[in-house]
Amino acid sequence: MERNFFGFPTGSHENIEQTKIVEREFYPYTIKVKLGDYNQFIEITEVKLSKSFIGNRSSQILSSTHDIEEFYK
Amino acid sequence: MFYIKDSYDNILRFGDVINGFQYFKPNFEGLPEVVDSNIKIEIIKSNYFVVLTPCCSIENENLNLTPLKQIAYKFFSNPYFEKDFTIINRRMLPEQTVAPRIWNDVFTEEERSKRIGEGVKYSFAELFIYEKNDLIPPYKLSYKGNPDIITGYYMIDFKDIFTIKSAKIQRNMEYPKILQLTIETREELRDKIGEYFKRVPQEDQIARV
Image 1 (cartoon, each protein chain N blue to C red):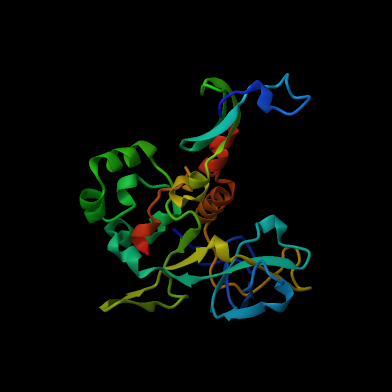
Image 2: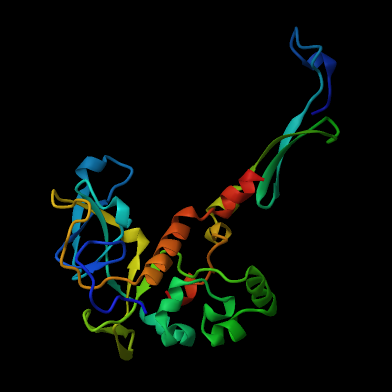
């Protein structure tokens, strides 16, 4: 969206910077990043475990156990 | 030695094999919908049960049991297991965990290196094998047209543990037991069931960093 001072409603003139949140996968994390008008980095807003990691059984294999059950089914 | 051979008393202990019970399993079919209208009670037949209440907690009318079950036919595909299935009760080398055919032909070089790097660990976190003994009869295992196998090995699954209640269950209660584990085997059972409950999934490990 093109920045347009007159496009903002009355009373919001001081906050004319447009930002957006983008989500990126850095397995096993999902990171939300706030970007400015020209896609410049502003800040990281959230880091969480990605859904694909949590839902993937092989990623939940417990470190104290050998992962072999599939060979005995 | 897996079991005490003779001269043991009838005081119930952790790991003892006993009989005379039924295994009832509530099945809440429609979870998470209206659970109280969708309950089935399954009766799972088993002739033998294992006491899984720690010795000093056998009291106050409650006792944890788990059925003694047949082992899996496919365990026989691994010659390391076939030699002595109780190897499953202890931590083992990665190359012992699967048949040599899988280790050499199915796993890539990278996969083998990764597993070797993980070192000695348990296999089948929830299982504990019971050694064959004349007092628990052998049985036949069949699998998809393969030759039948007769074995006397049994196993317990920590996921099957259930509780019974009886006014007779009190500290130092006596019950006509069939087999009692040696102190060493009881230690192995304690170690493995302890590990079963204290495992930390990678999800939690990563989230903690």
